[in-house]
Structure formats: structure tokens, C-alpha cells
Amino acid sequence: MPQSWHMTKRKILSDSLSSFVICALMMLVSAMTLRADPLGAQLERQIPLLMERHGVAGVNAVILREGREVWAGSFGMADPEAGIAMTRESVFRVESISKPVTAWGVMRLVERGEVALDDVVWDHITSWAPPPGTPEMTIRQLLSNSAGLGIGDFTARHPPGAALALRAAMERDFEVIDAPGAAFHYSNIGFNLLEILIEDVSGQDFGDFMSEMVLTPLGAGQASFDWSPALAERMPVGHDLQAQRIAPHVYPARASGGLLADSDDLARFVLAGMDAPHRTAEDGLPDALLALMHTAQVPVGGVYGVVSDGYGLGHFTETLSDGRTVVWHGGQGYGWMSHFHLVPESGDAIILLTNSQRAWPLFAAVLRAWSGALGVAPVGMARVVHFWTLGLVLTLSLALGAAAQALRLAIGWRRGRRRWQRPTLARNVLALGGGGLIAIVAWAAMQEYLIIDSVLPGLSLWLGLANAAAGLMLLLSALFAPHRS
Image 1: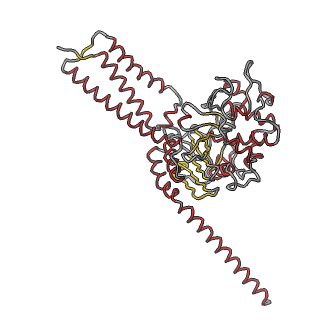
Image 2 (image 1 turned 120 degrees about the vertical axis):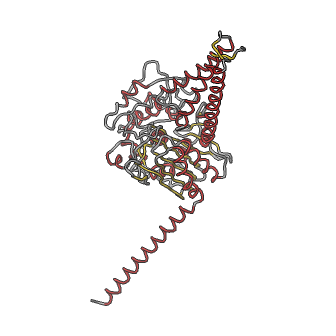
Image 3 (image 1 turned 135 degrees about the horizontal axis):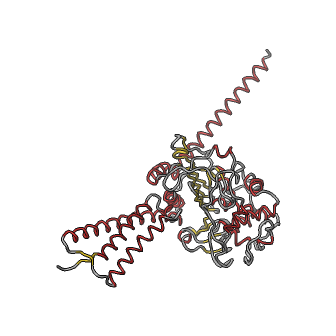
């Protein structure tokens, strides 16, 4: 064979080997960089302990800094019974994180000049009519949860392929509870209306439009608002507030809570919300529209006001202790929880996904650590950690108080110092208080979901029992008052 051929062959082999070595070194350096991140190292120790404490099945987490991934981790089990570990490729129900993604879809229509934010929504919706007398409300108000609409039936779940049609569900769920523009009211109904708006304006199915105009351009094309066998194969098993397995399900609507995505898909979406130069602008929204989405349109009050300052267009907003703006959204559904926090100015972000509904205290502790790494005071959602501590103290106090009073009653009865006596005003008030506590516990036990169950997963049951015990002791103390022999 010619000598030139042997020299060419040696050169090809040498170049290939060099390329392989370079790629391997780059991967090694990248892996060392990810593992060397101080916050990542802290979370690798902290998250497993939090999972065990709160009964969380599995977690996927990603940290972005200056628009780059610096750490990612998968923890626990996708399916504990089958022994299947959580992986980075696991697909989650991201629940209400669907709302900021849907907001992007609406802003695509704004970008194309097909709608304006202050248009009356009824001018664009043609396939569904609201009840007579429904007030005018704007697209901006729907996006900012200020249209005066109720939350809707968030417990409506159906087996995949058997969901009630969205427009039929709207006939049942649509409810105006306040004047449009008057105040913030977190509303699934409002975003479900935006799903209909997108379909009527674009002439496309909502899922197809969102894939074509939002998810695929951002590099998150594997995420979908539509259930499919391919995605279902990658989904972990969800777990409810009692840590029990749940069956796969879908909702009548997709815009408010139907997105299925893995941590990479969600990280790409979060990345697209960063300010330049931390993001690539070619496939994102114009800077002006993106800034508008991140600007508070309405102050947030009530329960949500504990963890947030305002609500923009599909995003909660909050001012950090150093004056920067952070935007975020969370998602909670039957068996699933999700969360992201993003500082657009610096390109810092954290993404959390879990197949457990017991993860709020875990999220709060992680967000507290993330805030510390940014050098700021804990973000609002981190306050859930304090709620857990207060709940534990209250539970122990009620239980010990009830036990002490039970002992006093038992000793009084045994020694004949307590007996039933005619009621007085003071004893009537005491009995009313005791009966009220028992009634509250009975009412709570009949509810399918209470927010306290998520804030205090596992603990809320013991708090309820301690509360009922305290109520019973108050009632018995009123009925059997001490007397002198």
C-alpha cells in the first residue's frame, strides 16, 4: 500500500484520539465544575435529609447562574415500589407552572399584533359564550389574575383520554367573584379562558400552538401540553399528601396546569426569561414584552401576600433585600409539586420538581439556601419553613395542654371535686369554644384539600387531633366544673 495512505491513516487515528481526549477532558472539567458548586454540594447533603423528614419520594433540581447550569441533581425514587430511581429524563406534571408558559403563548399573539393586552377578551373568543351579564374583562386582567374570576374546580381529574371537554367544564366552573381589575384573585378559570382565546385567535389546537410558538423555539420541544404514551413512559409515579401512589390523570383544561416537562425543558424556559446577555434572544420574546411580563400588574394580598409582593403577567413578583426583582411560580396538583425562582437581571435561577405533594417544606428549605448563596434575605416562599416550626410548636402545645387538663379532670373526678353543675356564662363560653374547635376539625376532615395540608404535610393530621383533644378538654371542663365539698 502507498506510504501516503499509511501516513493519512495514522493522522486520522491521531486526530480522532486527540478529539476523544479533548472531549473527555471537557466533560470531566464540566462535571467537576458542577460538583464543585458550593450550593450544589450543600443541596446534595440537604435534600436527601429533607426528603426523609417530610416523606418526599423523589426530586429533580437545577441551579442556573449567569444563564449557565452550574449544578443539577436527581434524588430518590421515580417509583419506590418498583425500585426505579429518579433520573434527569423523568417527566413531571409541572401543574401551575403551566401558567407562565401559557402567558408566553398569549404574548406571542401580542407580538404578532393579533391581540392587544387591553382588548376585551370577549371580542376575541368566538367558540364559547359567558353567562349573560358577565362584565367586560381584558386579556391583561386574565394574565395578572385580576379579572375577578374564581379559582375553579382544581379537583376535577380524569383518566387520560377521558377528560371532560374544556368548554363543557367552563359551563360548570365559570364564576365571577369580584369586579374586574379590583383585586388579585388566583384563578385557573382565567387561564382556561386564555386557552380558548389562543385557539380562537390562532385557529390551532392549544397544544399544537404552544409547541410551535413557544416550546420548540425555546429548545423545550419534548415538553407538551398533551398527554402521550411516549411521555407517560418517562413519568414517575405521583404521591399524595398521605404519601400514597396516585393513578395517572389529566384535567379538562391544559393552560392552567396541564404541561408535562422534564427539568431540562423547564430550565430552557426559565433561561429564556433572563435579561440579556444571559439568554439568546433570537427565539425569545422582545425585551419590552418580557419586561412587561415580569412587572407587577397588581399587588398580591391574602395568603399569597405572605410569599409574594405582586403578580405580573403569568408570574409572581418579589423584591429581594438588595433591591433586585425576582419572578417565580410554583405548581401543586394531586401528587405533584414544582417551583422555579428567577432573577432576570443576574441570570440566577433554581428549578425544583417532585413527584410528591408533601414537598413545600423541602422547597422552602432549599429556597432559603439558594437565597443565602445569592447573598440576600430568604425569599418569601422560604417562610414556609417557619410555618412548619410554628405548626410543630402549636401541635405539641395543644397536645401537652390537653393531656395536662385531662389529668386534672381525672384527679378531680376521682377525688369527687368535679361534677356537673348548672351552666354559667363563663362555662357557656368555655363550652362554645371547645365545641367550636371540635367543629373546625370535623369540617376540615370532610374537605378534599386544605392548604395547611401542603404547608404542614404529615403534621397537619396531628395538629388536627391535638386541636380536637384540646376542644374536648374545654368542653368537659365546662360541663364538669370544680366545686367545694
